[in-house]
Image (tube, rainbow, N blue to C red; front, top):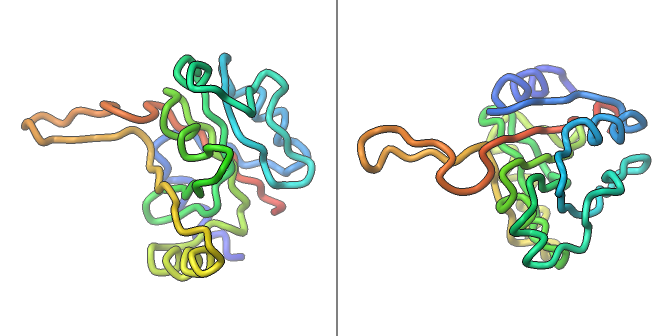
Length: 165
């Protein structure tokens, strides 16, 4: 993969990007996860969420969580966006409710732009994974005149990029 989309992604994410090898990702996750935390399993060999992360969150643990940890299906370089597939484990809820979202994405899953993302998402949709959240950091609105950020969803974003995946 060209390093250009990865560099663009890193500079576009409205938060912190942590580039690491999968073998070192557990240490990075331990640094960026603030308890209490909820999450879902990370589907990469050698990468697990810290033991303190509740991977079977109830509505009350989801509500009280400071950090939500999810895998991301894609990173979209132009926007610094990650896509979080919906699933039975509630990945999308984990990515939206906690004030801090930590997403884990493979470097090989960072695409340059929306047309490339649509192409890849089309493959997922054809396979039956037809709902995904596109997360691009804190919400922002200027509906009332002044720009207000962080009204809903996470107010802080960390993306862990697995350079060797």
